[in-house]
Image (tube, rainbow, N blue to C red; front, top):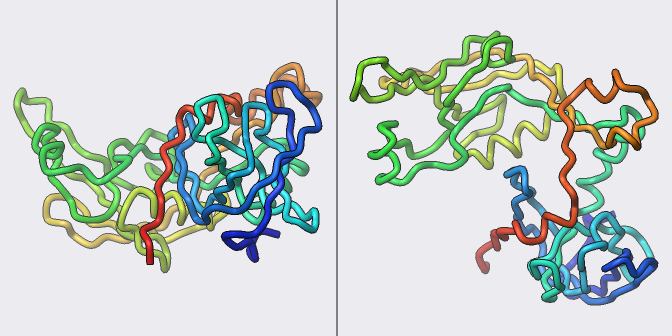
Amino acid sequence: KSGTTRVGQFSYAIGNPFGQDHTLTSGVISGMNRQITSPTGRKINGVIQTDAAINPGNSGGPLLDRAGRVIGINTASLGAGVSAGVGFAIPIDAARGVVEQLIEFGQVQRAILGISYLERLPTALEAEKSGIPRIEKGVVVLEVPPNSPGAAAGLKAVYRPPEKGARPVLGDVIVGIDKYDINSPADLSETLAKFKPGELVAVRTLRGPEAAPTELKIKLGAFKGSSFTKLENERGEEFTKDGTPLNVPLGEIAPAIQPKLPSAQ
């Protein structure tokens, strides 16, 4: 359990750093609620920071407290291949649901709208260059592929007129899902994580240049990330084809880390 983890408590990382199997390193919990970015670009929130040495080969191993209880799964380090005393672990409370899905389905299923959107709110200069009007909050819908959950509900993307020099026209800006407000792209990811594929949600948007309040009922789709390579999968070729494989070596995460540290309170 990671809910009771506190800064300053002892922590122990187990793994196979540089091929040295059954290695134990120790340290303390240095910080909580960090944010890191995976190689796929997805933001991972609520991450535990520890100064226990985490090197290539530690990824996927447990992070323990002094009683031997698993509090996290070692994930990455800022050392770009060598431990710098700044390691990160996914809290076990956050990972438990993923583990249960892997055991039951052999893959992870995440709720999605099936759209592409701006990954962050643009600056004034970026808005001027792209032609997309700047917004203060929300998520700008860039594309709504056919047959996606968003398309089925009537979600509108940015419209790009065919005339040369014409500026793009805003479609929908997502500002809420059910009772949750969406102020930024990070809010959208966090909110969708609270739902399961197939659930019906009310998506609140501001539509078009007039920012007309609109509400759409959307049945969430499923992003299926396979946990098996072709050689490891014993469930047959058809199972491998079902879903979107995520074959990202854990060792490659370290150089891509861009931590976001919470401000001091």
